Amino acid sequence: MNAVPVVGAATASRPSPATGPVTGDARARRYAVDIIRLHERLTYRRLLTELKGAPLSLIEDPRRRLVTLTARDSQFPTRYLKGILGFRLAQYLRLSWISPDSVHRTAAFHEPLLGSRAVENVHTVTLCRRTWKIRGYVGLACSADAESLPLDSPRRTPFPTEAAHGVDLLRRYAQPGLGTHQVFEFKRFLRDQTMPRGAQHTCVPWHLMLGMGESLIGLGDAVRIVLGDAKEHVALRHLRLGGFDLHVVEGTSPRLGASDPMAPIYRQSVVARPFVAPVPTDLPWYRDMIRSYLAGTSDLTSPQALVTALAARKRAGNGVPRPSHEGSCG
Image (cartoon, rainbow, N blue to C red; front, side, top):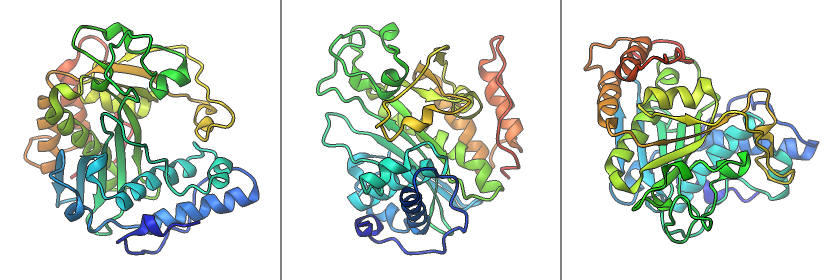
């Protein structure tokens, strides 16, 4: 396992004794455990200073010792981007959402780096300022089309969610001037599985939503539609609370080929549902509400109060479920 390029300038810390559930044959399980432990040791102390150019969003949270940054593929030095993609891989191995046999067979220690595309992926990363470990991640993945095509074009490349669920999520939004390069897929809404419960644990999802929201506001017309698949009690709830009017498709039977490393993610008792939504025009209001809450400058004193305020903004007959995270964010 050639892990040196990933480590780069990172420093080592003591790994957690728990490695999480992994399946596969004995060699694949051992390899998966090694990958998980590798990424537990990585820290990202110099990421902020080595990022190329200004981030799309930067959220400093000294009270909880968190910092969240959002940037495009090309802004991350390669070793850091590999580390971030490795965090994604390690978390999915912990959750048994990726095949350890496939990971072992390809000697992978991070998710694949994509080649040059006409548009770039966007990554939001939350770091702990005490340990400089990654505590959370969410991505916006760009279209694979070489040129921006109409949303109803028969030549456009389906996004991975569409291919897995066998649905066309974009045709309903087709209109002149709107192309596939303005559509991004919501990917890997993750909180570090090793985090103890507490203020950081509670607030990481809000950091990720805020970072993504601020980047969407800054990117403007470059991102008009988001899609993906998610479970109701996790990302779908947070997206709704963040102002997105989701169109969710029911009754799909998602599957990937047996050789696809991601095939296990659709073999769960509760399967993610595909969704699509325009970027809301009032996203700045949600951004301001979440940012003021995290900064402690609003009257909201608990996660429940934040949820109530966000839900009231767009309550139109269908209520918003209560949040799945616990604890105070104060």
